[in-house]
Image (cartoon, rainbow, N blue to C red):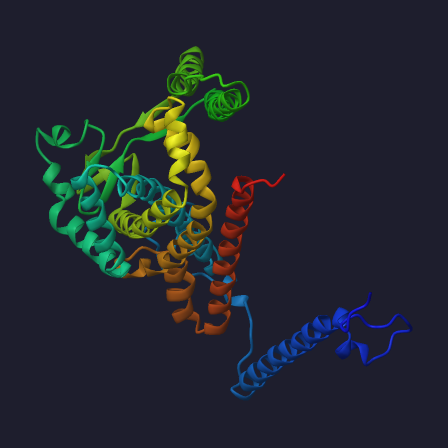
Length: 404
């Protein structure tokens, strides 16, 4: 029996593009695509016409010219005589560094706070609620400036570490927290260190494989295999054994006060630390609410059923509640990662030279190539946002409920 929406079978006619429900949606989509292309073509033509009228042209030759300015925090070799392209690369790496550290720390704090928001302890629950409400309702720029001001006002300057008790003033004699930045020991890799690093990476992979095997054994056979101590043993024992067998090929370069500043070790400027901490604790407040919502979305009957089987509260959370809550937590978590990455563009407020400070700041002002610089900025943030979304969506698909 045919319906009114079903067209009669026969040869194709142009009127079917509108009247036939099989083709109508494609027709409207095609028309919308043509209008969108025409709009972008008009804007591009208008841009080129205005640039030609002003005697300007779009060129990226400035990227090969000497930058002429210094960058205080670099992950690769850079001098003031390096090119603007090199400066942009330094800015990209600085942005990725603070985004990676921020996402990692925000996730740890957010999950921790989100779980404690549902604690049976009234005091703990209220403290976590105060943290969430305070940090997520104050602009992140304010937190960046506050933390930076605290570092400058509270932490000592390198000159305060002078004297006979200079080493004692450092934490464990190896870490120095100053108003200029944080100093820590740096690893020095000698011959044979690659073997130690390879074993260490293999140990990390082994931990994931072992925990996956333990979970599979629990789900398939009901066999409960301890994971904490075996994981610690896999993490430490092989690397330590290979480290001594290879003759200790990895040593540490400790920071020491020489002249007016510390030399050696790893130096992290206070601007990086302030930006990292501010973005982390600000974003963690939103992640905590996502985690709380995800846990509350799991039926209470799941917890009661797991408890009736004799599972402890910690294992109920790890094996029953959180795996089901992830399908609710992951989608908004992606948005929080994207927001943190884009909020890192506020780094210039504390003097941290990310991509906005290099390519979108000094380079743009020196060369006057605003269109080119802004276009590259947009392209970078678009690329990193799409990459984060793609990676997290793959993980999201892996934790979704599988239909039979």
